[in-house]
Image 1 (cartoon, rainbow, N blue to C red):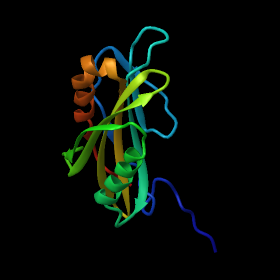
Image 2: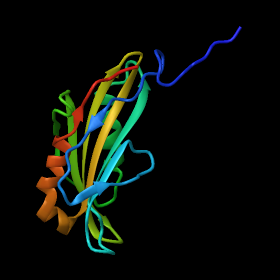
Image 3: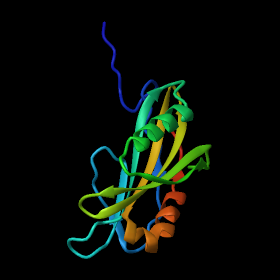
Length: 161
């Protein structure tokens, strides 16, 4: 006798439905490992500020604190990083976390990143949603508020099987 396992299905529910509100000069990008990504329109050859949304699936019991520890550990290993913000922060209407930092980059001078995390209970699994924005240091002085607004616009629709 055999049986069929399907995605989405009862034991493998669909990923959460997510949305972002983007300014008119932003457009969708295709980024490996992401469920959503967008970039700001910039002149040819200039670094493109971007937002990347990734969803990672874990077994029930995976916690926001585990996700925070993993991100903080990765960021702390970056040579020359300067941490700017680290706090508990509502993400997708759920308890979440944000970390903002800059670090030297040989190609563009300085990169600034902001990471927001939320853990979404999804039936028999847990989905970690990570929203990451990136810009150069000089771009960030002008558009960091815009990048934060994009992250804050993230919405969680229904989670369904």
